[in-house]
Image (tube, rainbow, N blue to C red; front, top):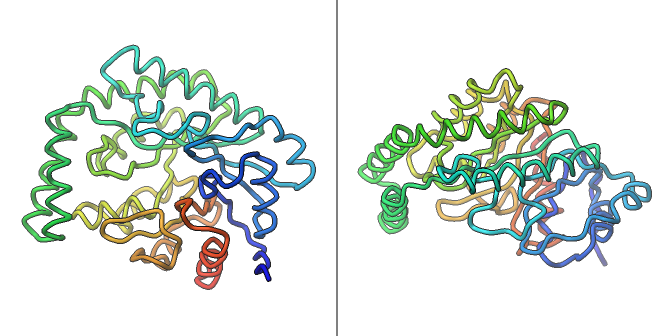
Length: 306
């Protein structure tokens, strides 16, 4: 027997399906069967056609409240949206064009939020150094000396990445001006080599405050940063909760993320205390986990009053 769905107020990211379901209709009906009322259009190795969305919405009543920039393209290491801060003018323009496509899609689906996730660092020397530090963290564990080296590295990335941050702000200014009714939100990437560190996030949000650019939290990626000795869940949430629009709910260990909530080390009671009641809550876990794990994750969150 298939376990029945759990009626809930979470959204389900379509990235949870991977390549198992090949149409938006199949994804929608599967979400409804699990008790979800909303979908997020998330990243996928093989994005599904969206031409059946209107029929799906009419038949299921599902809505889409968030779109992750990049969901229209096959997942890659550097999604177009991560290049908004590129020092290469052509790369920046391609990234802006991609964000425009996603903003138009959001308008078509009456979706209020477009998520800009992660910003690619482009200094090859710093990237190599960051990769070596990550390997050291995995090998040696969260030792004090490793933490100190990573913190010093991230501070240097922030200092030396100012030119890229300026490009990022100008790129977001461009698309936010063109789509004033769309809420663009910034989400930190998974690696500490991403340009959007804790300090950088605050500066960018402050710089773009006139465009109402807001924050989107990710429990798993922030946990990985915390394991590396960087600001953790409490500090990110305490600082940015007042500007938070939504949250991706997934668990993590010291080396893995996108786990179903309840299978890792994230303190979801702490996260729940800080998360605004109006924030969109999106279950986003790796597609290697199926229906059983998704339902167990929902039950885990419900049991903790999330």
